[in-house]
Length: 219
Figure 1 (tube, rainbow, N blue to C red):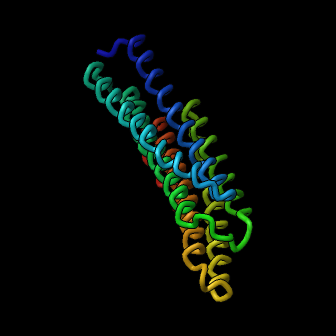
Figure 2 (cartoon, rainbow, N blue to C red):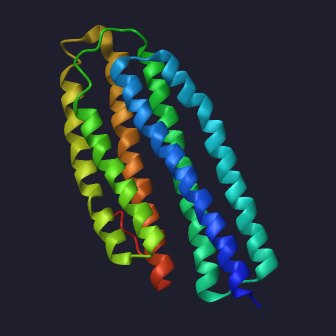
């Protein structure tokens, strides 16, 4: 039988660690685009190195969740809370990986003169960041309606992704020597688009937490 007070305390600790991890991943994501805009190689290297800390936090959450299941033997709603936290932790870890990928693109571009200022990509990221903030709030409040509303914004990210990549491809004829840079910028757009997908997965897990049902919000 689950001890209510003990379980709630342990679950709060688990969620606190999850939110701390999300803050680290979000910070890395934001910093990765700033490093790209300013071509800050050292900052990009720091982001890549910091991914180990995000991975460590994810492992710690996994271990604590497994111990909580083993020691408390939770059932029904309580078990859903732990499972949702585990799944959301995995999605956040992947967002941290995507921040690292963006930083690696910055290293590939190096100090090459940019074909154009990095202006639209940060706007696309801004939507993804707002989505992540909203998804975490939905998880904190166990708000399925908010989760659905957040997931609906993924269409905005997808639309911007399509427009930006199409625009980047138009630069190839005029910048044949900068194909590598254009490719890396297109990769960066793809990484941000993937952030939107992972946030949508977080929203799916919030809905599962609240309703016990699985919904595919990526369609």
